[in-house]
Length: 230
Image (cartoon, rainbow, N blue to C red; front, side, top):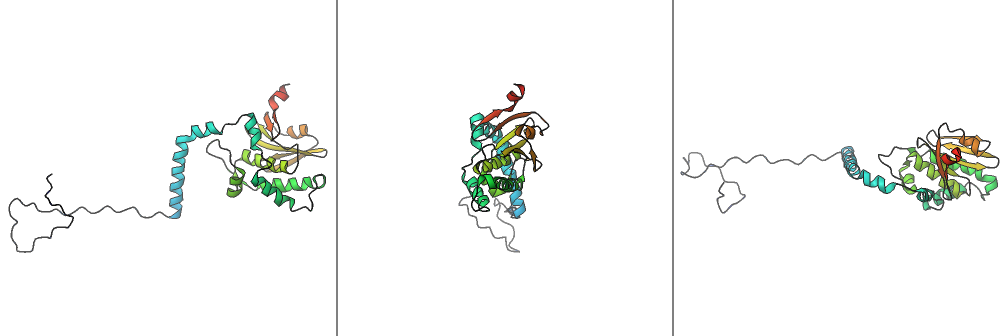
């Protein structure tokens, strides 16, 4: 379509009444189409839902890359337990403030109970992919998946000088935390928020009604399948 120059944005005035017909060859201007209106502003809830949808799209595109990069070997599993992490140190200080001074032989069981209570109050969530949460993020969100919560608890217990504290993983990937004190062993089932006492480490592990895969802390990794078959 030919464009008459010069082109201007100013609307042409409508012909005056009784002015007669326009000269031949001059097109009659058409009424402009109504302008498209921008969408209405989102409510805070709608904005949050949109952000969640966008995040899901990003995760769906990069899920394989993320999960591949989050895979851990034996040495890296041990590194997940961090008794000297900044967030762990802060939690340790909060616990030790209950005792003046803290003496392991006298106060560890009470301190361990405080640690277990703290971790079990963190909301259990199911992550959409394999991803290890940092302790600081778990404390900030007050949420984490069960394995991350188990690692958090083990790290706190290790920071309280408990050498025996370890994360135990069963065949269904269910996490537990085991620790010993005196003549007893204690098994924390993270999923159901329970802590059971047993006469020994073996007796405590015997409470788990499925095959055990491995246990670890920051010092060692044990293949529990090999031990069971040995």
